[in-house]
Length: 281
Image: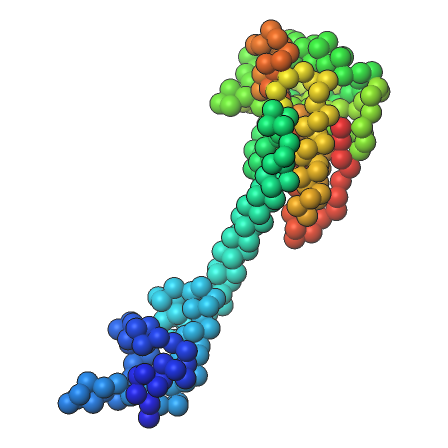
């Protein structure tokens, strides 16, 4: 038999923790001297003490440990804890990636620095059209026409406004200065009638995308793409799916192109698997 201090040394569990486990009914002394109150433990209790320590190191709560020691819900509790740790690992990866990015860009001009944010892209109903434009300047002509064609075929159609979401996805898999294959998408509140190559479809949720905000003309967007893809490479992520340019402010509400605001969004590969898809601009 060991007194509580000796048992503490053997198990590497503090006396305070042993008293706490006793109060919680996890590990009670084999004998308590009624005269002195001294607590005594036996070698037969060592395996239970080690199991409690192991479960605590796994991060289980006291109520969960009590259920596991009683043989209840063991598989469910371990599976739930595994999911929680995996979620925490993803969050830690994202935090480390952000810190690494900051450290790597500390010496850069603050005005030219891009802040990369990892976030979810929503599941949305959109009208969309795939087309090839001769140059990026064509956007100012072809995109308004797409909106006009949709409105003509669907007079009551309404775009999502809380918040609005329209973007262009690049389909070529490489940067091109002319003959660029793109898909324009605008989020709407309801299904409509397709017309002239314009279709309505659901764009599924993207769990994680690396995103940067670019303020200024579209001609300078290449710097934003360089920043986000450098961040992806430097932090061990993989781009998956076609990059998007989400237009927040533009010619429709900001007369000066210096005030245009665009978010470059690059879906990230889920580390559970999946193939890398072509990149974009």
